[in-house]
Image (cartoon, rainbow, N blue to C red; front, side):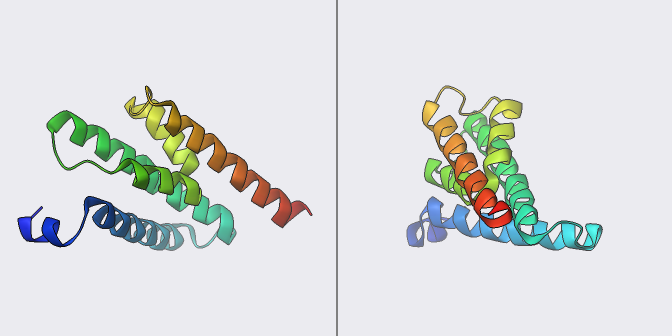
Length: 124
């Protein structure tokens, strides 16, 4: 990252914008490939989980190389907006953030939140 960018913006802002663009690009590509097979909400969960999974992998790679890390708040937010499955799989696959119980708590709470929303939206 350039010094000029880092002085104007925080890593949190950079990664939030990157996550938003990542979800949008993922949604666009999956819609083109799949032709809209899933309803909107499950499709959102899939796209945000894919991006969250890759953010966990990127952060693990950066932790080993000493690069610019993804802020924990961004990883939590990605789980809360629907990427909880990708967060869980990213923790398991990359063995990343497994010693920090708060990450599992946020993922479980996000899963319960979205399960409650699905129950309310689709079953009630």
